[in-house]
Length: 423
Image (cartoon, rainbow, N blue to C red; front, side, top):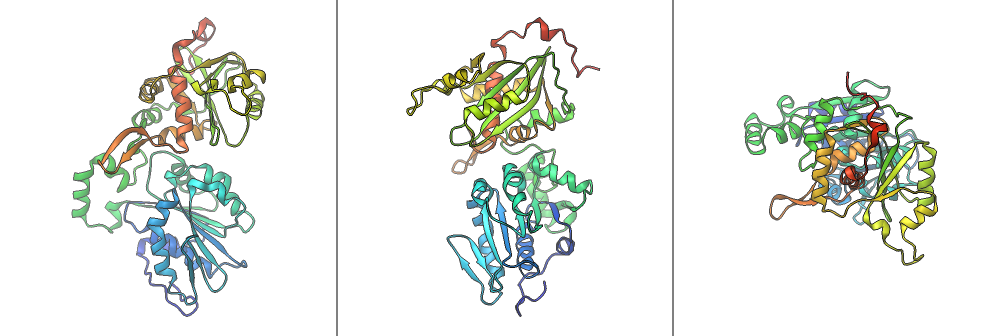
């Protein structure tokens, strides 16, 4: 590393990271095995950028999936390397490092990405992007790079074919401004072969392939639908799915109050369930959501909603089902009040009949891949409870769809239409 303000940063990059530091690509994707040094390399790239940025008051960020996790894995490293620069100060409460030239680096979590709106960044490291809510990048971080043409690096280990996989594909295709590095443990030489052999024995082939051989096809650990989502890919049932104007559309909702509302759109054709669209909105009221449905110009048959749509609000005395009906949303069907585990099993059975539009359902598909169990750290087992995060909304709406599948007859009109999946 170069000298910065007459100080030598105590970092000597491994040879496999040197080309990453030398690159001028605006968007750098690094798919690397565990213990490859991603965090250290990313932080030192930020430190160096603080003294190379041509703009006044440069702002940089290291963003992990969750703030607590980012603090545990990153803050001590940042203080260790940045403290070599004389005059550097650290703000413990804000996880912020300020250099004497006016540049700063701050550690954030993508779990509260709306709080970052209004910030600008000259460069960011988006750590373990596969664990992110992809909306954090699209709605918050990417716009924050625009006015100063900031750069972004994405170091991570695969978590199935999710948004991180999509970024890797952009870099693999060589899109302008994108560059890709892939580091398998069997090829990097960082970890001894004996250690890798022991890890394989302890972890099993699936987890080992994901964590050390950077396989995007290995199921996400603890994921409810890992096997089913992989089968969808194998069967090529995630693709462009045409909207048939002769077939009516059902919607299935998960209603949010303080968080997101998720809606799946499905056409039933014979035994096929064609997931033609997905909508997710945050901070919008029921009138806005109904307007969005009207703008899609689908021929709606019914709208499946959860049990809590019948609860009356204290402020108005009206239930949300009454509000929806007053807005012209009729043919409402209430999902049965069954357990989460019953719903998950229903989804597993239903996915074998599903086709998903790859583009319109992209965010919903990411959520289904990431929907997973809570890890019980005390007992060292996966619990029966789902982990509640951004992926829960789409997964809950899918449960309501699966549980209500057979409550309304599909009718001969839909059954007479040929299946597009049959050659």
